[in-house]
Image: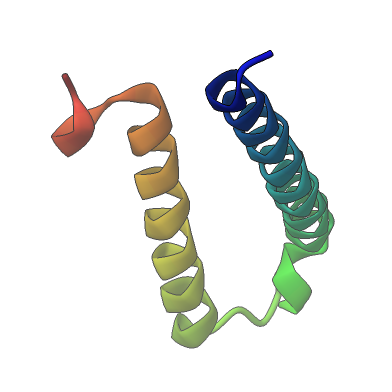
Length: 78
């Protein structure tokens, strides 16, 4: 195995390790958000005020941007 081939193999291994670490972090965050959503993000459904609605609107916009990037929608369309 040449030095260049060995570096390429290490790079591939390191890339995969970094990807899997970030994926685990991402999955943890999704699980936390899913649980928080099931609990209405701590808001009492009978007493929701505009602050909670505004926060959820902002959070939804951020998640939509992430989904649009991944699925190449909207401004990220190819």
